[in-house]
Picture 1 (tube, one colour):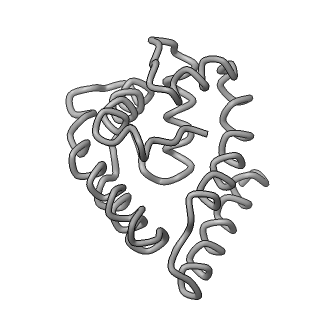
Picture 2: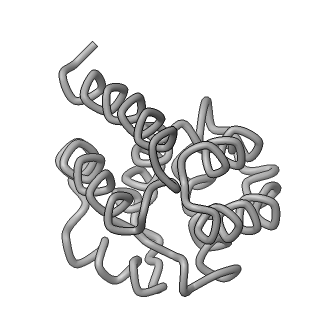
Length: 145
């Protein structure tokens, strides 16, 4: 297991402990975690900063590196496994780790996007479909590190 994966696991454990002691992760803490995931996934797939920035503003290109970047990010956060969206796990993690106001919004997106990847075989394409759905459901909540 590489060091980044170990660090990600440790971060999730830390988040659970933090959740026990507080009202849940804030957007600032979520963004900090996102930077760690980005530092692993971006060089792995070779997606450009410009492509990520465009997607973070809702401009999604049909770029294979973007799609696989999204799949990498979702894989590290356990919301995508073997090309399948883990909506129930995403909802459970939202309840366990996030503040109530953020958790409710994340759970709404997870429910509404539950089937966005159905019928799509390629994991990277599934990730893009889920990401587009999340943006459409709640562009204010949408965050792409």
